Picture 1 (cartoon, rainbow, N blue to C red):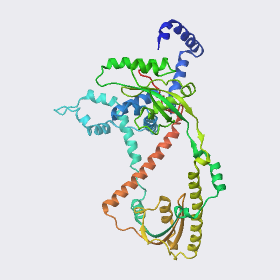
Picture 2 (tube, rainbow, N blue to C red; picture 1 turned 180 degrees about the vertical axis):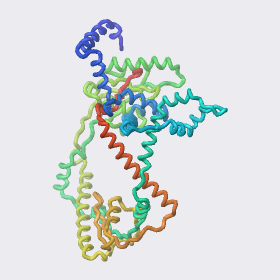
Picture 3 (cartoon, rainbow, N blue to C red; picture 1 turned 135 degrees about the vertical axis):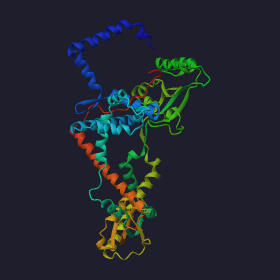
Picture 4 (spheres, rainbow, N blue to C red; picture 1 turned 60 degrees about the horizontal axis):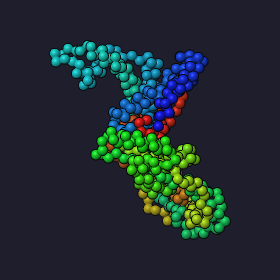
Length: 479
Protein backbone atom coordinates (compact mmCIF):
# COMPACT_ATOMS: atom_id res chain seq x y z
CA UNK A 1 0.00 0.00 0.00
CA UNK A 2 2.84 2.37 0.80
CA UNK A 3 5.32 1.09 -1.83
CA UNK A 4 4.96 4.30 -3.86
CA UNK A 5 5.92 6.43 -0.86
CA UNK A 6 8.94 4.28 -0.02
CA UNK A 7 10.14 4.12 -3.65
CA UNK A 8 9.88 7.86 -4.30
CA UNK A 9 10.80 9.12 -0.86
CA UNK A 10 13.39 11.65 -2.06
CA UNK A 11 11.03 13.03 -4.70
CA UNK A 12 8.27 13.51 -2.12
CA UNK A 13 10.69 15.24 0.26
CA UNK A 14 11.61 17.66 -2.52
CA UNK A 15 7.95 18.39 -3.29
CA UNK A 16 7.22 19.03 0.38
CA UNK A 17 10.20 21.38 0.53
CA UNK A 18 8.78 23.36 -2.38
CA UNK A 19 5.46 23.67 -0.56
CA UNK A 20 6.82 24.55 2.87
CA UNK A 21 9.60 27.04 2.05
CA UNK A 22 7.31 29.64 0.37
CA UNK A 23 5.11 29.52 3.46
CA UNK A 24 8.02 30.54 5.67
CA UNK A 25 9.11 33.15 3.15
CA UNK A 26 5.68 34.79 3.06
CA UNK A 27 4.78 34.69 6.77
CA UNK A 28 7.96 33.87 8.63
CA UNK A 29 8.20 31.21 11.31
CA UNK A 30 6.04 33.05 13.85
CA UNK A 31 3.39 33.86 11.26
CA UNK A 32 3.30 30.27 10.10
CA UNK A 33 2.96 29.04 13.68
CA UNK A 34 0.24 31.60 14.35
CA UNK A 35 -1.67 30.39 11.31
CA UNK A 36 -1.49 26.82 12.55
CA UNK A 37 -2.57 27.86 16.04
CA UNK A 38 -5.70 29.55 14.68
CA UNK A 39 -6.72 26.39 12.92
CA UNK A 40 -6.70 24.52 16.22
CA UNK A 41 -8.44 27.23 18.28
CA UNK A 42 -11.96 26.19 19.19
CA UNK A 43 -12.95 29.11 21.40
CA UNK A 44 -11.43 32.21 22.97
CA UNK A 45 -12.05 33.48 26.48
CA UNK A 46 -10.71 36.94 27.29
CA UNK A 47 -8.57 36.61 24.15
CA UNK A 48 -6.98 33.34 25.28
CA UNK A 49 -7.67 30.27 23.15
CA UNK A 50 -9.09 26.91 24.14
CA UNK A 51 -7.42 24.60 21.65
CA UNK A 52 -8.45 21.28 20.19
CA UNK A 53 -5.34 19.71 21.72
CA UNK A 54 -6.41 20.93 25.16
CA UNK A 55 -9.90 19.47 24.69
CA UNK A 56 -8.50 16.15 23.42
CA UNK A 57 -6.15 15.87 26.39
CA UNK A 58 -8.93 16.73 28.87
CA UNK A 59 -11.29 14.28 27.18
CA UNK A 60 -8.70 11.51 27.49
CA UNK A 61 -8.15 12.26 31.18
CA UNK A 62 -11.88 12.33 31.83
CA UNK A 63 -12.44 9.11 29.88
CA UNK A 64 -9.67 7.37 31.80
CA UNK A 65 -11.05 8.64 35.09
CA UNK A 66 -14.62 7.40 34.54
CA UNK A 67 -13.63 4.34 32.53
CA UNK A 68 -15.55 4.99 29.30
CA UNK A 69 -14.65 3.34 26.00
CA UNK A 70 -12.51 5.12 23.45
CA UNK A 71 -15.35 5.45 20.95
CA UNK A 72 -17.48 7.31 23.48
CA UNK A 73 -14.55 9.52 24.44
CA UNK A 74 -14.19 10.53 20.77
CA UNK A 75 -17.87 11.35 20.34
CA UNK A 76 -19.02 14.90 19.71
CA UNK A 77 -21.29 14.91 22.77
CA UNK A 78 -18.50 13.81 25.13
CA UNK A 79 -16.05 16.40 23.83
CA UNK A 80 -18.71 19.12 23.96
CA UNK A 81 -19.27 18.32 27.64
CA UNK A 82 -15.51 18.55 28.21
CA UNK A 83 -15.37 21.89 26.38
CA UNK A 84 -18.24 23.20 28.53
CA UNK A 85 -16.30 22.22 31.66
CA UNK A 86 -13.12 23.90 30.42
CA UNK A 87 -15.10 27.02 29.53
CA UNK A 88 -16.65 27.16 32.99
CA UNK A 89 -13.22 26.83 34.59
CA UNK A 90 -11.86 29.62 32.40
CA UNK A 91 -14.82 31.87 33.24
CA UNK A 92 -14.40 31.22 36.96
CA UNK A 93 -10.73 32.11 36.66
CA UNK A 94 -11.63 35.29 34.79
CA UNK A 95 -14.18 36.21 37.48
CA UNK A 96 -11.66 35.59 40.28
CA UNK A 97 -9.18 37.85 38.51
CA UNK A 98 -11.69 40.61 37.78
CA UNK A 99 -13.09 40.57 41.32
CA UNK A 100 -9.54 40.68 42.69
CA UNK A 101 -10.28 37.87 45.15
CA UNK A 102 -7.65 36.92 47.67
CA UNK A 103 -7.24 34.03 50.12
CA UNK A 104 -5.06 34.54 53.16
CA UNK A 105 -2.43 32.02 54.17
CA UNK A 106 -4.37 31.34 57.36
CA UNK A 107 -7.62 30.65 55.51
CA UNK A 108 -5.80 28.44 53.04
CA UNK A 109 -4.10 26.48 55.80
CA UNK A 110 -7.37 25.94 57.66
CA UNK A 111 -9.04 24.73 54.49
CA UNK A 112 -6.18 22.39 53.67
CA UNK A 113 -6.16 20.85 57.13
CA UNK A 114 -9.71 19.62 56.63
CA UNK A 115 -8.74 17.25 53.81
CA UNK A 116 -7.18 13.78 54.33
CA UNK A 117 -4.44 14.52 51.81
CA UNK A 118 -3.30 17.51 53.84
CA UNK A 119 -3.52 15.80 57.20
CA UNK A 120 -1.03 13.33 55.75
CA UNK A 121 1.50 16.17 55.58
CA UNK A 122 1.73 16.24 59.38
CA UNK A 123 4.34 14.04 61.00
CA UNK A 124 3.62 11.81 64.00
CA UNK A 125 5.27 14.36 66.28
CA UNK A 126 2.93 17.05 65.04
CA UNK A 127 5.45 18.85 62.83
CA UNK A 128 4.42 19.97 59.38
CA UNK A 129 6.24 19.03 56.15
CA UNK A 130 6.77 22.53 54.71
CA UNK A 131 8.33 21.29 51.48
CA UNK A 132 5.30 19.20 50.60
CA UNK A 133 3.09 22.11 51.64
CA UNK A 134 4.81 24.44 49.17
CA UNK A 135 4.52 21.78 46.49
CA UNK A 136 0.81 21.53 47.13
CA UNK A 137 0.42 25.29 46.97
CA UNK A 138 2.17 25.22 43.63
CA UNK A 139 -0.51 22.86 42.34
CA UNK A 140 -3.13 25.64 42.42
CA UNK A 141 -4.81 24.89 45.75
CA UNK A 142 -5.05 28.60 46.46
CA UNK A 143 -6.78 29.27 43.15
CA UNK A 144 -9.13 26.34 43.66
CA UNK A 145 -10.12 27.69 47.06
CA UNK A 146 -10.88 31.12 45.61
CA UNK A 147 -13.08 29.54 42.95
CA UNK A 148 -14.77 27.39 45.60
CA UNK A 149 -15.55 30.46 47.69
CA UNK A 150 -16.88 32.30 44.64
CA UNK A 151 -19.13 29.42 43.61
CA UNK A 152 -20.35 28.92 47.15
CA UNK A 153 -21.24 32.58 47.56
CA UNK A 154 -23.37 32.47 44.43
CA UNK A 155 -24.86 28.99 44.86
CA UNK A 156 -25.74 29.71 48.49
CA UNK A 157 -28.27 32.29 47.29
CA UNK A 158 -31.59 31.89 49.04
CA UNK A 159 -34.97 33.38 48.23
CA UNK A 160 -35.05 37.01 49.45
CA UNK A 161 -38.05 36.58 51.76
CA UNK A 162 -37.53 33.85 54.41
CA UNK A 163 -41.10 32.58 54.15
CA UNK A 164 -41.29 32.75 50.36
CA UNK A 165 -40.16 29.14 49.86
CA UNK A 166 -42.90 27.97 52.23
CA UNK A 167 -45.43 30.12 50.38
CA UNK A 168 -44.43 28.53 47.07
CA UNK A 169 -44.73 25.10 48.66
CA UNK A 170 -48.23 26.04 49.83
CA UNK A 171 -49.16 27.12 46.30
CA UNK A 172 -47.98 23.78 44.94
CA UNK A 173 -50.20 22.04 47.44
CA UNK A 174 -53.28 24.24 46.89
CA UNK A 175 -56.10 22.14 45.41
CA UNK A 176 -58.83 22.77 42.86
CA UNK A 177 -61.90 20.69 42.23
CA UNK A 178 -62.52 19.99 38.55
CA UNK A 179 -64.88 18.10 36.27
CA UNK A 180 -63.91 17.15 32.73
CA UNK A 181 -65.58 16.27 29.45
CA UNK A 182 -63.44 15.00 26.55
CA UNK A 183 -64.26 15.28 22.86
CA UNK A 184 -61.83 12.71 21.51
CA UNK A 185 -60.91 12.51 17.83
CA UNK A 186 -61.07 8.73 17.97
CA UNK A 187 -64.76 8.89 18.92
CA UNK A 188 -65.61 10.67 15.65
CA UNK A 189 -63.62 8.58 13.16
CA UNK A 190 -66.62 6.37 12.36
CA UNK A 191 -68.65 9.47 11.54
CA UNK A 192 -66.49 10.58 8.61
CA UNK A 193 -65.98 9.25 5.09
CA UNK A 194 -63.25 11.05 3.13
CA UNK A 195 -63.96 11.74 -0.55
CA UNK A 196 -61.54 10.83 -3.33
CA UNK A 197 -60.81 14.52 -3.81
CA UNK A 198 -59.93 14.96 -0.12
CA UNK A 199 -57.66 11.91 -0.20
CA UNK A 200 -55.91 13.10 -3.38
CA UNK A 201 -55.45 16.62 -2.00
CA UNK A 202 -53.89 15.29 1.22
CA UNK A 203 -51.55 12.98 -0.71
CA UNK A 204 -50.40 15.76 -3.05
CA UNK A 205 -49.74 18.11 -0.12
CA UNK A 206 -47.84 15.52 1.94
CA UNK A 207 -45.82 13.45 -0.52
CA UNK A 208 -42.81 13.50 1.82
CA UNK A 209 -44.78 11.35 4.24
CA UNK A 210 -44.90 8.61 1.63
CA UNK A 211 -41.31 8.69 0.42
CA UNK A 212 -39.05 5.68 0.60
CA UNK A 213 -35.46 6.51 1.60
CA UNK A 214 -32.48 5.84 -0.61
CA UNK A 215 -31.43 2.20 -0.18
CA UNK A 216 -28.43 0.21 -1.30
CA UNK A 217 -27.61 -3.45 -1.67
CA UNK A 218 -24.29 -4.28 -0.05
CA UNK A 219 -21.54 -6.89 -0.02
CA UNK A 220 -19.35 -6.97 3.09
CA UNK A 221 -16.48 -8.83 4.71
CA UNK A 222 -15.83 -9.27 8.42
CA UNK A 223 -12.41 -10.17 9.78
CA UNK A 224 -12.64 -11.23 13.41
CA UNK A 225 -9.82 -12.31 15.70
CA UNK A 226 -9.89 -15.82 17.08
CA UNK A 227 -9.20 -15.75 20.85
CA UNK A 228 -6.92 -18.76 20.40
CA UNK A 229 -4.97 -17.10 17.60
CA UNK A 230 -1.52 -15.60 18.03
CA UNK A 231 -1.99 -11.77 18.13
CA UNK A 232 0.94 -11.38 15.76
CA UNK A 233 -0.72 -13.67 13.22
CA UNK A 234 -3.96 -11.74 13.47
CA UNK A 235 -2.07 -8.47 13.09
CA UNK A 236 -0.66 -9.75 9.79
CA UNK A 237 -4.13 -10.76 8.66
CA UNK A 238 -5.49 -7.36 9.62
CA UNK A 239 -2.75 -5.64 7.59
CA UNK A 240 -3.56 -7.85 4.60
CA UNK A 241 -7.28 -7.14 5.02
CA UNK A 242 -6.74 -3.39 5.13
CA UNK A 243 -4.33 -3.38 2.19
CA UNK A 244 -6.27 -5.71 -0.12
CA UNK A 245 -9.64 -4.03 0.37
CA UNK A 246 -8.00 -0.66 -0.28
CA UNK A 247 -5.65 -1.51 -3.14
CA UNK A 248 -8.13 -3.72 -5.03
CA UNK A 249 -11.13 -1.54 -4.28
CA UNK A 250 -13.30 -2.80 -7.15
CA UNK A 251 -13.96 -6.12 -5.43
CA UNK A 252 -13.93 -7.82 -2.05
CA UNK A 253 -13.03 -11.15 -3.63
CA UNK A 254 -9.22 -10.83 -3.45
CA UNK A 255 -9.35 -10.22 0.31
CA UNK A 256 -11.97 -12.94 0.76
CA UNK A 257 -9.91 -15.48 -1.17
CA UNK A 258 -6.62 -14.71 0.54
CA UNK A 259 -8.03 -14.68 4.07
CA UNK A 260 -10.65 -17.39 3.46
CA UNK A 261 -13.57 -15.15 4.38
CA UNK A 262 -17.14 -15.38 3.16
CA UNK A 263 -18.58 -12.44 1.24
CA UNK A 264 -21.91 -11.61 2.86
CA UNK A 265 -24.75 -9.68 1.23
CA UNK A 266 -27.54 -7.46 2.49
CA UNK A 267 -30.31 -5.62 0.66
CA UNK A 268 -32.17 -2.50 1.68
CA UNK A 269 -29.49 -0.70 3.70
CA UNK A 270 -30.29 2.96 4.42
CA UNK A 271 -28.16 5.79 5.75
CA UNK A 272 -29.35 5.04 9.27
CA UNK A 273 -29.55 1.26 9.45
CA UNK A 274 -30.44 -2.06 7.91
CA UNK A 275 -33.83 -2.68 9.51
CA UNK A 276 -33.82 -6.44 8.98
CA UNK A 277 -30.46 -6.91 10.75
CA UNK A 278 -29.83 -7.12 14.49
CA UNK A 279 -28.52 -4.04 16.25
CA UNK A 280 -25.03 -5.53 16.57
CA UNK A 281 -24.66 -6.18 12.84
CA UNK A 282 -21.68 -4.50 11.12
CA UNK A 283 -24.13 -2.80 8.76
CA UNK A 284 -25.82 -1.11 11.69
CA UNK A 285 -22.51 0.37 12.81
CA UNK A 286 -22.42 4.16 12.41
CA UNK A 287 -18.83 4.19 11.14
CA UNK A 288 -19.54 1.61 8.46
CA UNK A 289 -22.74 3.37 7.34
CA UNK A 290 -21.01 6.72 7.19
CA UNK A 291 -18.28 5.27 4.97
CA UNK A 292 -20.76 3.41 2.74
CA UNK A 293 -22.72 6.54 1.91
CA UNK A 294 -19.78 8.74 1.03
CA UNK A 295 -19.70 10.01 -2.54
CA UNK A 296 -16.83 7.79 -3.67
CA UNK A 297 -18.45 4.64 -2.35
CA UNK A 298 -21.82 5.51 -3.91
CA UNK A 299 -20.70 6.82 -7.29
CA UNK A 300 -17.89 4.37 -8.00
CA UNK A 301 -19.14 1.42 -5.93
CA UNK A 302 -15.66 0.99 -4.47
CA UNK A 303 -14.76 -0.84 -1.28
CA UNK A 304 -14.81 1.33 1.80
CA UNK A 305 -11.55 1.46 3.73
CA UNK A 306 -11.45 -1.14 6.48
CA UNK A 307 -13.22 -0.01 9.63
CA UNK A 308 -12.39 -1.37 13.07
CA UNK A 309 -15.79 -1.53 14.72
CA UNK A 310 -14.61 -3.34 17.85
CA UNK A 311 -11.26 -4.57 19.18
CA UNK A 312 -10.22 -7.38 16.85
CA UNK A 313 -13.11 -6.85 14.41
CA UNK A 314 -12.55 -5.24 10.99
CA UNK A 315 -15.15 -4.62 8.30
CA UNK A 316 -15.03 -3.59 4.66
CA UNK A 317 -18.03 -3.27 2.38
CA UNK A 318 -19.10 -2.10 -1.06
CA UNK A 319 -22.35 -1.09 -2.70
CA UNK A 320 -23.56 -3.37 -5.49
CA UNK A 321 -26.89 -1.71 -6.29
CA UNK A 322 -28.47 1.66 -5.57
CA UNK A 323 -32.20 2.22 -5.14
CA UNK A 324 -32.86 5.99 -5.18
CA UNK A 325 -35.38 7.59 -2.88
CA UNK A 326 -38.85 7.61 -4.40
CA UNK A 327 -42.45 8.56 -3.70
CA UNK A 328 -44.82 5.64 -3.29
CA UNK A 329 -47.80 5.88 -5.65
CA UNK A 330 -51.17 6.76 -4.11
CA UNK A 331 -52.62 3.32 -4.84
CA UNK A 332 -49.91 1.72 -2.70
CA UNK A 333 -50.57 3.96 0.31
CA UNK A 334 -54.30 4.50 -0.10
CA UNK A 335 -55.21 2.91 3.23
CA UNK A 336 -52.74 5.05 5.19
CA UNK A 337 -53.73 8.26 3.40
CA UNK A 338 -57.41 7.56 4.05
CA UNK A 339 -56.66 6.89 7.73
CA UNK A 340 -54.84 10.19 8.15
CA UNK A 341 -57.50 12.19 6.30
CA UNK A 342 -60.16 10.53 8.44
CA UNK A 343 -58.33 11.58 11.59
CA UNK A 344 -58.14 15.17 10.38
CA UNK A 345 -61.86 15.26 9.56
CA UNK A 346 -62.71 13.56 12.85
CA UNK A 347 -60.66 16.12 14.78
CA UNK A 348 -62.60 18.91 13.10
CA UNK A 349 -65.89 17.30 14.16
CA UNK A 350 -64.62 16.87 17.72
CA UNK A 351 -63.42 20.48 17.85
CA UNK A 352 -66.73 21.78 16.53
CA UNK A 353 -68.74 19.72 19.03
CA UNK A 354 -66.50 20.91 21.87
CA UNK A 355 -66.89 24.55 20.81
CA UNK A 356 -70.68 24.25 20.83
CA UNK A 357 -70.70 22.64 24.27
CA UNK A 358 -68.24 25.23 25.59
CA UNK A 359 -70.41 28.10 24.36
CA UNK A 360 -73.34 26.65 26.30
CA UNK A 361 -71.13 26.08 29.34
CA UNK A 362 -70.04 29.71 29.39
CA UNK A 363 -73.69 30.73 29.66
CA UNK A 364 -74.41 28.17 32.38
CA UNK A 365 -71.17 26.86 33.97
CA UNK A 366 -73.11 24.87 36.53
CA UNK A 367 -74.68 22.67 33.85
CA UNK A 368 -72.08 19.88 33.90
CA UNK A 369 -74.29 17.10 32.60
CA UNK A 370 -72.08 14.45 30.99
CA UNK A 371 -68.95 15.62 32.79
CA UNK A 372 -66.83 13.31 34.93
CA UNK A 373 -67.20 13.13 38.69
CA UNK A 374 -65.45 15.95 40.51
CA UNK A 375 -61.85 15.34 41.57
CA UNK A 376 -59.37 17.43 43.52
CA UNK A 377 -56.07 18.21 41.80
CA UNK A 378 -52.97 20.26 42.64
CA UNK A 379 -49.53 20.77 41.20
CA UNK A 380 -48.35 18.13 43.61
CA UNK A 381 -51.19 15.81 42.51
CA UNK A 382 -51.91 16.55 38.82
CA UNK A 383 -53.77 13.21 38.38
CA UNK A 384 -53.77 12.68 34.57
CA UNK A 385 -53.75 16.31 33.44
CA UNK A 386 -51.23 17.43 30.85
CA UNK A 387 -48.90 20.27 31.77
CA UNK A 388 -50.91 22.67 29.57
CA UNK A 389 -54.22 21.65 31.15
CA UNK A 390 -52.80 21.83 34.68
CA UNK A 391 -51.44 25.35 34.07
CA UNK A 392 -54.82 26.50 32.76
CA UNK A 393 -56.75 24.98 35.67
CA UNK A 394 -54.41 26.45 38.28
CA UNK A 395 -54.53 29.87 36.60
CA UNK A 396 -58.35 30.06 36.59
CA UNK A 397 -59.68 33.05 38.55
CA UNK A 398 -60.74 31.69 41.94
CA UNK A 399 -62.97 34.75 42.46
CA UNK A 400 -65.24 33.76 39.57
CA UNK A 401 -66.04 30.11 40.28
CA UNK A 402 -67.25 28.00 38.60
CA UNK A 403 -64.86 28.68 35.69
CA UNK A 404 -65.22 26.82 32.34
CA UNK A 405 -62.06 26.06 30.33
CA UNK A 406 -61.44 24.61 26.87
CA UNK A 407 -58.08 22.94 26.17
CA UNK A 408 -57.19 21.76 22.65
CA UNK A 409 -55.23 18.51 22.50
CA UNK A 410 -53.58 18.67 19.08
CA UNK A 411 -54.41 15.58 17.07
CA UNK A 412 -56.50 14.09 19.87
CA UNK A 413 -59.44 16.48 20.22
CA UNK A 414 -60.52 18.93 22.93
CA UNK A 415 -61.17 18.64 26.67
CA UNK A 416 -63.52 20.92 28.62
CA UNK A 417 -63.01 21.56 32.32
CA UNK A 418 -65.07 23.24 34.98
CA UNK A 419 -63.16 24.50 38.02
CA UNK A 420 -65.74 24.37 40.79
CA UNK A 421 -63.99 24.89 44.11
CA UNK A 422 -60.61 25.69 45.62
CA UNK A 423 -59.08 24.85 48.97
CA UNK A 424 -55.70 25.47 50.61
CA UNK A 425 -53.03 22.84 50.77
CA UNK A 426 -53.42 20.15 53.36
CA UNK A 427 -50.86 20.21 56.16
CA UNK A 428 -47.66 18.65 54.88
CA UNK A 429 -45.33 16.42 56.80
CA UNK A 430 -42.65 18.82 58.16
CA UNK A 431 -39.93 16.73 56.56
CA UNK A 432 -41.64 16.83 53.17
CA UNK A 433 -42.20 20.58 53.49
CA UNK A 434 -38.55 21.12 54.40
CA UNK A 435 -37.40 19.01 51.44
CA UNK A 436 -39.60 20.98 49.03
CA UNK A 437 -38.34 24.28 50.45
CA UNK A 438 -34.74 23.09 49.93
CA UNK A 439 -35.50 22.09 46.35
CA UNK A 440 -37.03 25.50 45.64
CA UNK A 441 -34.00 27.24 47.10
CA UNK A 442 -31.72 25.02 45.03
CA UNK A 443 -33.61 25.90 41.85
CA UNK A 444 -33.36 29.59 42.72
CA UNK A 445 -29.61 29.19 43.31
CA UNK A 446 -29.19 27.41 39.97
CA UNK A 447 -30.96 30.23 38.16
CA UNK A 448 -28.75 32.78 39.92
CA UNK A 449 -25.60 30.82 39.09
CA UNK A 450 -26.63 30.53 35.42
CA UNK A 451 -27.16 34.30 35.28
CA UNK A 452 -23.83 34.82 37.04
CA UNK A 453 -22.00 32.68 34.49
CA UNK A 454 -23.75 34.39 31.57
CA UNK A 455 -22.59 37.76 32.92
CA UNK A 456 -18.96 36.63 33.01
CA UNK A 457 -19.31 34.99 29.61
CA UNK A 458 -20.28 38.35 28.17
CA UNK A 459 -17.59 40.18 30.15
CA UNK A 460 -14.88 37.77 28.98
CA UNK A 461 -15.89 38.20 25.35
CA UNK A 462 -16.28 34.48 24.73
CA UNK A 463 -15.94 33.87 21.01
CA UNK A 464 -16.45 30.66 19.09
CA UNK A 465 -13.68 30.15 16.51
CA UNK A 466 -14.07 26.60 15.18
CA UNK A 467 -17.11 24.73 16.52
CA UNK A 468 -16.50 21.12 17.46
CA UNK A 469 -17.39 18.58 14.81
CA UNK A 470 -17.87 14.85 14.87
CA UNK A 471 -14.50 13.25 14.21
CA UNK A 472 -14.17 11.17 11.06
CA UNK A 473 -14.89 7.56 11.89
CA UNK A 474 -13.69 5.95 8.66
CA UNK A 475 -10.42 4.74 10.14
CA UNK A 476 -8.32 1.88 8.88
CA UNK A 477 -6.38 -0.30 11.22
CA UNK A 478 -3.27 1.28 12.56
CA UNK A 479 -4.46 4.80 11.82
